[in-house]
Length: 124
Image 1 (cartoon, rainbow, N blue to C red):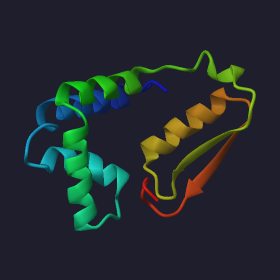
Image 2 (image 1 turned 120 degrees about the vertical axis):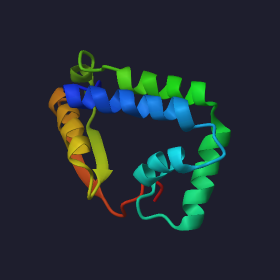
Image 3 (image 1 turned 180 degrees about the vertical axis):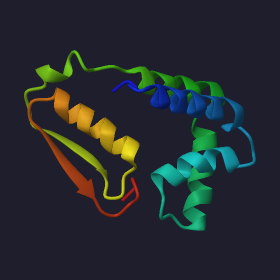
């Protein structure tokens, strides 16, 4: 779902700028922001590997373009037509912003169920 509040729009633009500026650099500091989102409890080796995977898997331009498409997708008008049960997953300790977005998604689908996942990592 599209970012809805002014703060979420500003956060989205900041993330996109971060991708454009630092994604392709040898220094992993920029990508570490994303790694910590997906692997909050990861080991140093997992962080290193995931940072390198991101750098090699997309150019900064393509990574920003993909994320821009994802952030701008607005399925609110078609979500109510989803007829099958929809499971909305998030980490057990998901951010407040993530929980708000999940709640908006559930509000737009007829049969959405919410489930919190353990462990904290997206990769598990």
